[in-house]
Amino acid sequence: MNKKVADILLRKGSNITSVAPDTSVLDALRIMADQNIGSVMVMEGGRYQGMMTERDYSRKIVLQGKSSTDTKVAEIMSANLPRVTPADSVEYCMQLLSDKNIRYLPVFEHDLIIGIVSINDVVKETILSQQETISQLKDYLHSSL
Image (cartoon, rainbow, N blue to C red):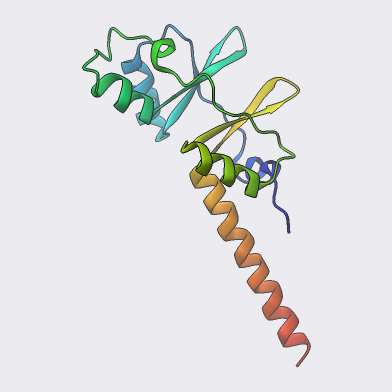
């Protein structure tokens, strides 16, 4: 039962909320609040530029005393997040998120952004996978009695 990034995207959908690099941080935060999400993709001309997360906001705006109305998303976004593909395993994602102490991974297929995987998605998929295994073991035990 080796779960893949593709399984996560199938379950949650590959909905991408994006903003332009010159969007104000405040506008991006409003979009995140409206959709109850912790990050937005930063896209320009259909191409991935980076991601702005709540952590980017708290560390690069709040702690540095910058203005969220005057600062553009491009100035604080995370542009160097590791990329994963639909074929990558959930375990690999967990390792990346843990090793790099990050919460989001952009998902790419042939240089095109197709989704996003969060630490919550990875944990949820792991729990679902364990529940399936337990269920199968119970079935096996009952059938062999």
